[in-house]
Amino acid sequence: MRGYRLVDGEIKEPRVFSSKVLKDIEAIEFEPFDWKSEVALAKARWNETPDGKDIIRLPAFDGAEYEIVIKSKRGRFSMREWNPFEDIDFYAPYSEKIAKLKRVIDTLALDMGRRKLELRLFD
Image (cartoon, rainbow, N blue to C red; front, side, top):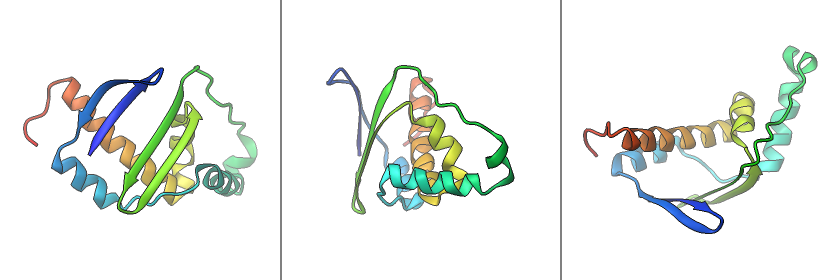
């Protein structure tokens, strides 16, 4: 598996992930889904909770647009949103699909962080 960070259409920091990371991600059993539809369902589930009626969520506006593409044997997932990580974290408890996306991102982030900090002991 390869990962890329694109900035203004140019590849920055290409990455190749270890077989352990691939196994960890495969164990998540992530299935592609329509992001906007799933957020709408998760939002409806959240609104049905006691907190959903009392809390007003404000979106994050940090000026960073992200595109997340995951291609696997299960299909292709793609989303393009402005700073989606707050929504991913917030709606994960209300959607199994978003929760699995969060787990994939967290697995990759942990591996990338360990590489950056040079804490990788083995692959």
